[in-house]
Image (cartoon, rainbow, N blue to C red; front, top):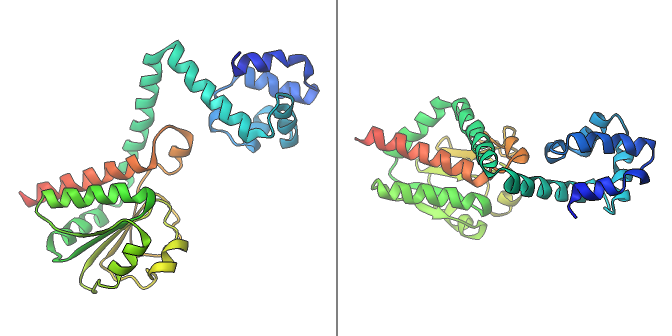
Length: 247
């Protein structure tokens, strides 16, 4: 028995308020994938407590658990019923992110490319989810004959950061752009003009003058697009632009 069958089975167990939730979700199951409990309550014209009671009738502790199973159900249904439509849907989600790359500050991007070309010593730091795109940039620059220093954890980065001079280039990848963990190991609050932050957060807590904000942070919460893949695409874009200027 799948989730929708379970919901139908409990049809007569719902109160008048919960029945509003039932009617809406039966007709719009995909809305659950991207909507918060507050948004679902608004769409169903009930309170959030009404949503919670609906979920508990179905045997869930709360909306989060119900939503998790609904997302799983929706993905399984798409795969089983029409895999071609699912493939096209996911391609569209990636394309919607890629199209937003046009919003990147191209002046700062070109400025970064020039500094990569003209700076003798380059440092690249990326930790956790940011380590993959950072390493991708390191390998790409090596293929172009440009050597770099690279750190992929905070302890290693703290030692590396102490060796950086003002005229060196530092490229710091941080998907969230937070400073909590960073401040424990090294201080970016006084970063030089040769420091660049690559982030997906349009309002990063790290205050760095040269910040390149990538698209997709909001969309990634509503789709299958992985945050790391967005930054890797940016790195590919950066490397190809750099390669063309080196010809």
